[in-house]
Amino acid sequence: MQKPDVDVQFFTEHPDRKYRIRSPLKQMVIDKQRGSHVIDECELEFRSLGDHKRDRRRIVLCRADHRGNLLPEGKILKVPFLLYADEAVEDDDATLGPIIFELMFSQQEPDVMGF
Image (cartoon, rainbow, N blue to C red):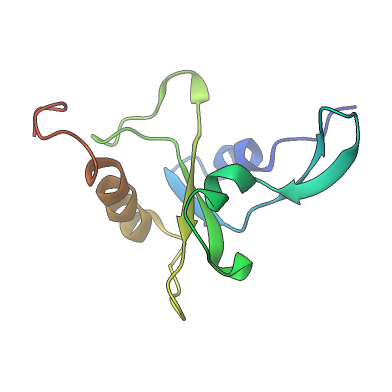
């Protein structure tokens, strides 16, 4: 029996939501020597962000494009996100939408998306 995807379940229960923030989940990984160990979800992506405290890690889930339209085939984009020192980010679309927009377009070439 396969474990249900908590993100799909969340968006199914809350069809009006397009964004969500949560702590990374734990996942079992099997390495090349066939040894298994537990790591945080998106561990490699978080390591690429440099030194930081593990308790500041968050995953922002996005199921809408930059225009607010739902992604095709029910896809959900996972974006690794680090909180600042005592920052709290509200888990609502009005707060998370602009954060995702800023993250996506801060490194974008100026004319790629027509902006």
